Image 1 (cartoon, rainbow, N blue to C red):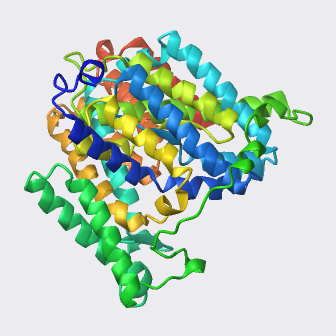
Image 2: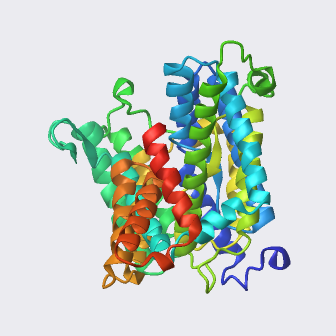
Length: 451
């Protein structure tokens, strides 16, 4: 392991990598419940979707570990699975096999782009200041996700979001918010005291407190409102259901599907996945200090290729686009620096096929402390931004402001790139804007106009 993963060279050890790998998995485990539920709306069997989710995460994460030696985990992406189920198969009325075909073609295109250095060139073209803005934006984004998972932040018709009503919903939303805050304090205190497993301990301790709350009646199970039992249950998976999705991409019926509409669907998958992946790699790698002196990520070609291969294989298994997960930052926050942590995460996804009900019982409020605290660690990257230079600072600011408010990494990158080009060109700094940045800005503008 030392020779292959270069643990000492990366300032880590086996114990740290294992703990970090488990931490990453536990922050991502929600996808085991969410993805099958979403894809079932497209007509895919939930059990088959669960198996496909686990297998695509396992294969994709192992590809990342073995090809690039990075602590990044992959799984079917949130947002893209919603677009797959509710827009392509729902609003547009396409059969889910056609949607899988679009994902598969996207994967093939990404493989070509990764081998021809196009995606690598895009990554390297992003200015250093924007890279730091992306990292901070992802920090705010995952913290916002954590606040929602904790039920500390809830929807509000007047202000869009608000804080939880502790008085009227204490036994559901309220107690979840309280437990998440307790878990957050546990995580912070242990981190300050330099416990390596502080983030993982925070997740597990919050979950245990939740089960105790359910036992004594503080937490009320309300399935209709989305508050399920916190007790893990043992049940075996029906593996025969996997045949309902495996290889079905090759049986897609394109009769009645116009080429123009299919291209639009394909481009939407392609565009969001490309910049979500690049944004995640930029943000997490910046936090882990993996970028070299030229602000480039070594072995990025292999990381992008692993992501592309995972997308293609995921479509064959029967799930929406598989992509690099922002929750990988939780593992990085726990000390992950090599692919060994990804190996651990990947095998846990494989194990989850057999014990999925155990892992899907992990509530959102238990993983919320990890996301909120890791968000803080990532936001610290703004300290390296030169706020005296407005032409550099404002695009970075708009980038990390947009990500949580628009609920999208790719939208944050788009706003950052467009503003960077416009501000610098109009202020006479056009020489520092690379040709590829002009191309990216134009692409983003066209996306807003035509897509």
